Amino acid sequence: MSDISGKLFLVGTPIGNLGDITYRAVKTLESVDFICAEDTRVTAKLLNHLDIKKQLISYREHSTENDILRIVEKIVSGKTAAEVTDAGMPSVSDPGTRLVSACINAGIEVDVIPGPTALTTAAAISGMNISRFAFEGFLSVSKKQRFEHLNSLSEDRHALIFYEAPHKLLTTLSDFLDVFGDRKITVCRELTKLHQEVLRTTVSGAIETFLHRPPKGEFVLIIEGFIPPKAEITSDSLADAAEYAISLINDGKKMTEACKLSAEKYEMKKSDIYNKITELTVTELTEYY
Image 1 (cartoon, helix red, strand yellow):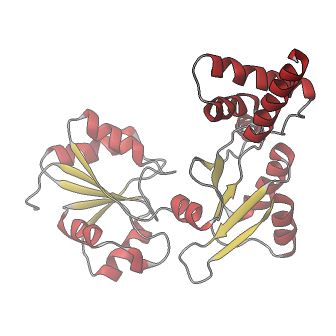
Image 2 (cartoon, helix red, strand yellow):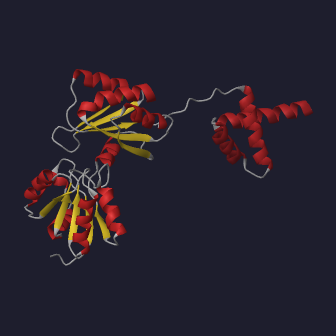
Image 3 (cartoon, rainbow, N blue to C red):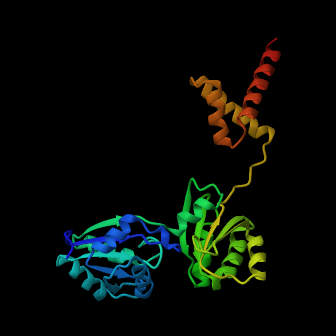
């Protein structure tokens, strides 16, 4: 038995290229007493590649509460366990959260050995603005729930990241077009694997591509967030923005800061507001003289 007792390790595993396994992940898998795996056959291949022999216990989406209880009891008795998914980080679009919660509730220490994830790998290579993004996982197979989900995101300004299986890809892209319109999208396929592909296009362009080439492999989709239409700037709205900036100046703000704050409030260019203030000032001086 390991010298670390009664503990659960969440271990990130490669999403395709086995060379992406980390040194800590290997040492952890070697040290634990047993491994909880989403698919024991997939994990067995990884362990064989690493020349590691460990007891594998199946833990997946359809595991019962009794299955989870048996795992928790083994850890409480002093055993150390690792939890792995087929690829990537446990608990990310994965049932691992149920086991983690059960261990936490039982007072078991939980640690994490970080590793690759398809969502951050795809986000990094997408070429989109990902300073803020929302991970939405897999869409429901229920048409009603799927459209409820997508409609709730229709005005979200973050980049949106989804996972999708090949047989549902065209349906999902068509639903994107219906709800989001023809936005920019990056379609990532088989990331880190031999046939990795990154397609940067529009939703309609992606549909056209995969109508002529049947989708194969696992997909990550990154679609740009909602870009609100710019309001038409009228002379009245510009005058309102200038008057607001003038009120800020009267309250002690500097001209440049006042114009910046007004530009943010009215969604206009700072230079337009600055010019309008100058125009108003000149007009007032002309009328005075």
